[in-house]
Amino acid sequence: MAEIGATLREARMRARIDVSEIEAQTKIRAKYLRALENEEWDLLPGPTFVRSFLRTYAQALGLDDKALVDEYRRQYEQPSEFEHQPVMSPRRSARPRPSGGGPGPSRGYAIALVVVGVVIVLLIVGLLTNKKGGGSPTTQAGSASTQGHNRHHRTHHTTHSGASTNRTIGLVSLSLHPSAAVYVCLIDAAGAKRIPGLTLEPGSYTPRAYHSTRFELLLGNNAVTMYVDGKAQSVPASSKPIAYSITSSGRHTLAANQQPKCE
Image (tube, rainbow, N blue to C red; front, side, top):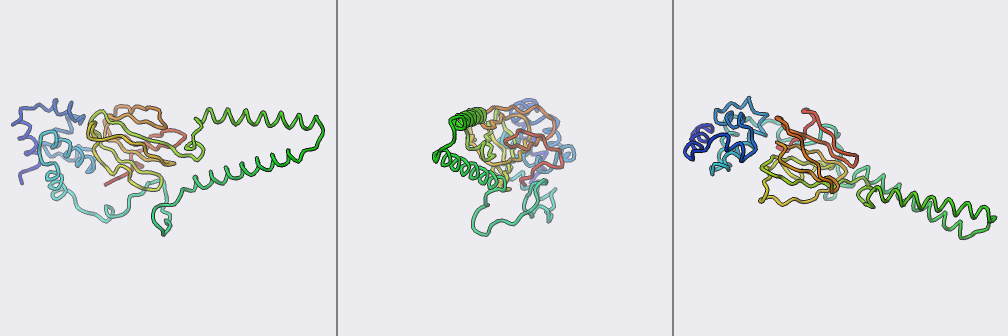
């Protein structure tokens, strides 16, 4: 097979397409496109992005993207023991999973259920105590006032939390809406790869909502709008890969050494 860079360059020149046109179409910066054509791999962010950029560039030129990526792997990547290990979040220690089927509920989820159960038991005991009654009119009036305050507090809390079960148990809803081709790696709290390092494109990708107590997200560029619990959040422009940790408390940027890996 001909050299990877030469194949890309010759296909682009035969089609009489300028690098700037490819940049506008794929949202890949022109300097990275030229680095691919010149096989200057050290100018690119890393092997994961080389493969993603190769796929997107080849598809834009009508080439066999799988053949080019396979050739890159064969010539420039050496399989290592690390690549065969399960991908885990750098912040999460390894814990044994239950032997039966899929991953069990997270610790936060179990704690939230226990808290909710205790609150329900306390409310039932309080109602039974009030029914057995007695007490002076003053005591009863004070109890009624306290209950009214508690109901107001619960109503106020429910209103501000959106009356959502997700909020109660710490779950967060996340969906991604690409506006152009964008590389995405999405891993949930259980370590499952919800989007396993794919290039998403509008029209060919149908957005869906994912739910977890925590997500780790890696983006190749900012051509995507995030919807966290139904609220749109844009991604700021960056010349480097962008990574976030997303929980019910908000979105936090991850450092380069904390970025999730899907490949």
